[in-house]
Image (tube, rainbow, N blue to C red; front, side, top):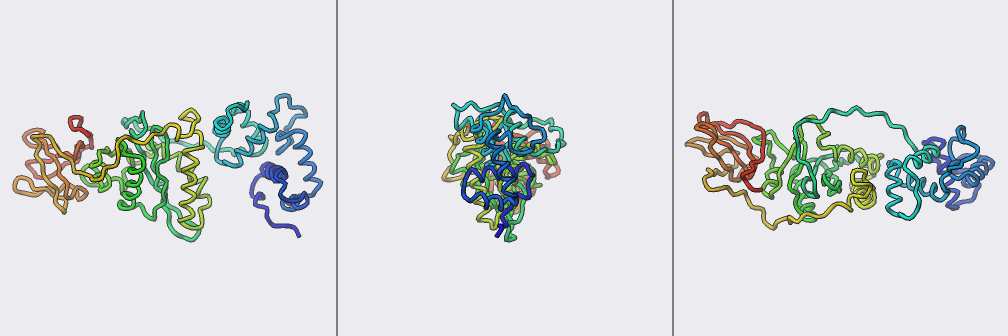
Length: 398
């Protein structure tokens, strides 16, 4: 009885032929069973095998343009390993495939990526991509990460539902300099307390970065004074400077924009059956991404070759900021207010219980600081705050 197992019928005829040859080489079933599984006659199967024996992988796939002689044909064993690597990593292009193989077997004369690309194209393993229109980069300068842990980039990929209908929202954190994927964890919702628990584990494992870049949405930022959320306040107390991208410009966190496309393609297309199985898929992706996957920006070596844990260990106790002598200090009440000249001024509920520093700018205005960060101005005449761009004050140590 003919088997129904033909998942490759959803792919191109060229890829189907590649899968047929790979299955034939494995020899796990009789030739008749193999032909039945691929829904072809034994005559067609024998033709494919003979063409592969005489021409190698050049003889697999679309034959309409194949020349009768191949003076520069890639060695059969090399070609087979290139195609196998591509089948094992279907989202990798020829550059990444060749770099990965060179890293594993540096003594083998691997062909140029262009040659490997031609081989994969003939085998029907190259998908044509439509050009993507990209937004122009924002002109405001952001921190340039030159060393590991100078800057971590954090974001949510965007939620989806697993096979059983449960919600998963992947949180990712990448080291900007080394591209090392520090966190890839599925949460039910993007809430501050859950993110804090995940980040605390990351800090204990990798140490503390100098800064963290995020977008302007919760739980990373708020609409309060300085845009500080409870999560960002915790970071500042740890000596980590929050850095936020301009609203509507995800390309400013481009390290994650590209990663998220790859993450979706390799772990969630389609999603796994349950959140637990989805997390195991995330864990496997993170290990492969860090330890195996070549990165073009790193000279085609995987991120683990470039990343080193931070020398700044996660402290056993998190202290509130201290201020220089001469700074007027007020502690924020639970309702987000401070006492000021006989009245009350609202700052932010994210700062509840924390000390803030006030430094006179002139006779009327005071600069409001939280640790090393200027978060706004206080109008001493009107007893109200004015929002100003958040900046790091160079005179205050981190």
